[in-house]
Image (tube, rainbow, N blue to C red):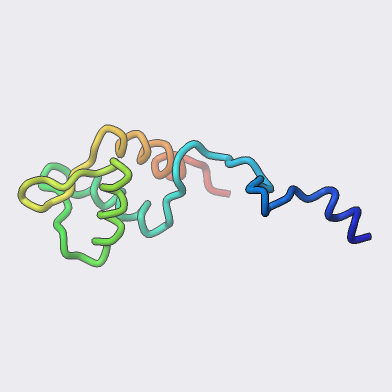
Amino acid sequence: MANKVQARLPDLAAGRRLYRPMYNEPYLETCCRASLHRVVLAGAPGRPDGLKDGPCLARLAGMGLVRRRADGRYEMTDAGRSRHAAEILKHAAAPSH
């Protein structure tokens, strides 16, 4: 039986994957999606640094979804607007059951 199971599983030691990735973009944790939305809500004034979501803002900046301005506040990039529309607004528009 073990040989049959091993025959169906890829050789992980050789670096092969069990599944193909489903998305072309890195996954955003719930906290980072919420942080991205808070940047949208902050609007033109920007989201200040030093709040609890600071690590998420830094991660989002590293992904190019937000940028840190000279005054230290974070603002949305075009890539961030697209990601927000695809992930956050999509869920808001979905009908509830």
